[in-house]
Amino acid sequence: MRAAGVFVFLVVASLEAAVSGDAQIRAQAGSSEIVITTTSRLAGAIHSLRWNGREFIDSADHGRQLQSAANFDMGSKFIPETFNPTEAGSRFDGAGSKSTSVLHALTVKGNVLSTDNQMAFWLRPGEKSFGRSAKNTTALSRYYLKKTVTIGAHGLPHAIGYDVTFTIPKGEHHRYAQFEVVTGYMPPEFSKFHAYDLKAQKLLTLSDGPGEQSHPVIFSTPDAKHAMGVWSPAQPSKGFEQAGYGRFRFKAAKVVKWNCVFREKNAAGVPVGDYSYRCYVLVGTLKDVTSTMITLRRSQDKNCN
Image (cartoon, rainbow, N blue to C red):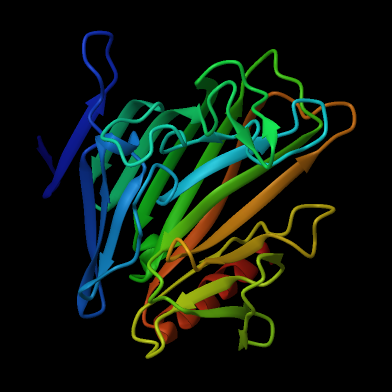
């Protein structure tokens, strides 16, 4: 259908048919459009982001996307990936054409994409990671993820608003929750890792790590003509002030990864319910990314005063 001069595409879940995850949004950013593509193969997770003739996402298996995931301790020692609901699907899904995750709704309206996803566990029951067995007893979790992605957030062409809500279902008990609100797996050509000191408005060289630190991260090509960064006004999580923004270089797999991570910790138990976070993914030249990040920060500071 058509409304107010823009095309509206709506898909709603039904018992009779699966929801299609094949969708695209686009909007002008400088001399080129930012084009974001989702697929049914990935249950509505972002398979591709293109700008100025270059692909920014290395979408290989069901983990290397622009997507969200969470890790929980199940009330025991925290071991990464052993209880790990993941938007795009499971490790078992590999490079296949289907996802264990289930897409329940997808809406596209102009430059805005929204999805409602029931996440698969990264490990299937009996599989291991870091030498430890999966804590989940099913392949499909009861954890839901809702996201809204907006190209040109706040009228800034190079800013992509990324709003995510994770739902911890009733009956679950965790003392520690780790929310990877958004992560981007990128081609190895984005070889320059930067941190950005927003207070000093200074670009810093960032080591390969791996791991997190407190400054927003930006990956760029050596010529600085293509870059992607991430920033959240809500960082850092309480008690984790030296973390929040991660970077990783996987040389053997020929891929690089950044993420924006929030954490909840409660010895009496992390309450069930919704956990909502907002990040901004910045795309353009390195200069576009830093200048947009500064503008977003100033706008945030102004709104807080």
